[in-house]
Image (cartoon, rainbow, N blue to C red; front, side):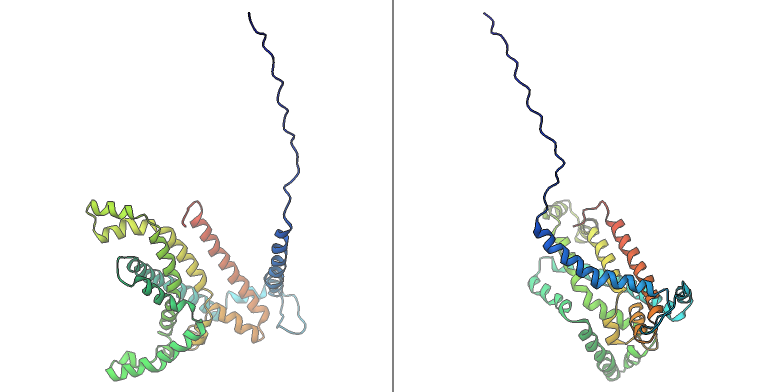
Length: 304
């Protein structure tokens, strides 16, 4: 005897609603004050400054709209062009020096050596010291200690202060800036090297690879993302150099070590407010282009 089949009723369709997910009030509590402070402290002054770059404003009093005159003069001003040339050259040399030394130190401080944790702490110390204090200390060393040492040893080129030589003052700036910048770059490289699985090196040992081959064919390719990050971030930081240069050379001798940041800040106090705001606007565009370069280099890569 056959049992009649019964049809099961269809399941009710879920109701589709366009109701958005409710935003927690705590979100606005933290976000809105931050946006207000950011707008008042950074965005609004930047917009006002860009506006005044199209005027003849000196910082006080009346002003008139003069269009692109400040920008036209800016690109033909030898002092401004010299500051850009120094800043870009200084940043390029420093970022190369910092990354080479930091990477080699990171390789050594991640090897099987004694007291490597203590050594890491020692190498990080310059990062926590104020840049202006470091600059004054090295100013004394370059102006007094090293010349005295050079005279006692009979070394002519060391008997004169680097800071008084227009051709060598930039070397002192690079040395001091690199000395302070190496620790932060070093920590990033240490993190990158420690993220490499140990099995990779064990397999290389079994295959008979030397330490140098492991360094060039395993370590360097696997930490390349960290190299890119350190180079781009370092370059962005070095083009904003100010405090170390002020404490070390104050832009001298003459204007041989005057950076773009120094030119902008000194112009604010010298009655060139609108002119230096045009300079700051161009400098801001340069920084944006470097940031875009960083995004393009890191796009699609899981570097960290």
